[in-house]
Length: 308
Ligand code: NCD
Image (tube, rainbow, N blue to C red; front, top):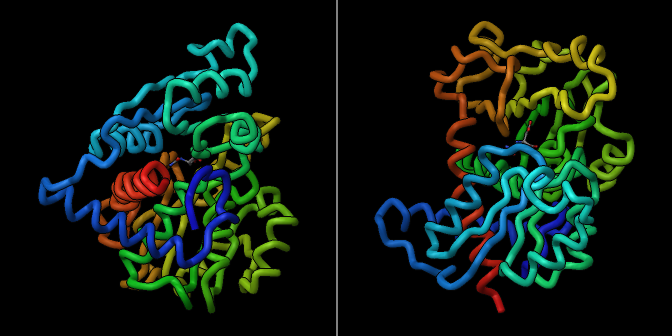
């Protein structure tokens, strides 16, 4: 299977994931030994972000540069690109595709990456399309689970927080649905549950899911606790956000019930849902997870840009 556009997680299978994870792990080893090959030499990658980002944009840009490529970038494209003059996303993409060999795009509108891919002369990598998907985050999330726990099949995983708007959860669940024997607890306030059609999709793929509002009683039964931020920017009512934003707080005390070998993940940024006193707990994997993003994105770019 050849990778070209990366628009959503439904385009992956276990075989390609394994290939990507092997390459990411090689990238990490070579990087640590100072022996990376400049496989993106002569390539230009455009990072075009219409929404804020820290990890995704910086890790993509670092990935390109570590592999000898160059980056052109708009970190605030809604203000500093011609979007402010009224140019459509399609027109901007058509033009940028003449300057770059691939475009990494983040945009507030669901479906924007797909739209971009329909006019782009070069590969589009979806770095988050509104509340839709964030496929490269899910790739690094899955890679982290595999690296930390040695397997994915058969795990018990709780995803917690904003399952309605949280695009990282949407993408992660799709990838997890490719694996066998998983038990997945969906923990959210009732108003922020996983969309119905998404539940139906993972169920139909054979995933055993169970919705719960209560976190405490689930902790003793899981291998992975995947925490997400309540996505304030996607709420229509500020009041509702205020009511829900502190629905779950993980601190040292709550973690007493989580077993020793379990891991705590978060795509970051965290706000109040994990208190900083958890950071020094060895089960807290979220900063290791963020680092894995660099190697996954190196591997992904290498596979996309060097597979012709
Ligand atoms: C996430 C995103 O942008 O969806 N951040 C990230 O890319 N690591 C999660 C979030 O913003 O809550």
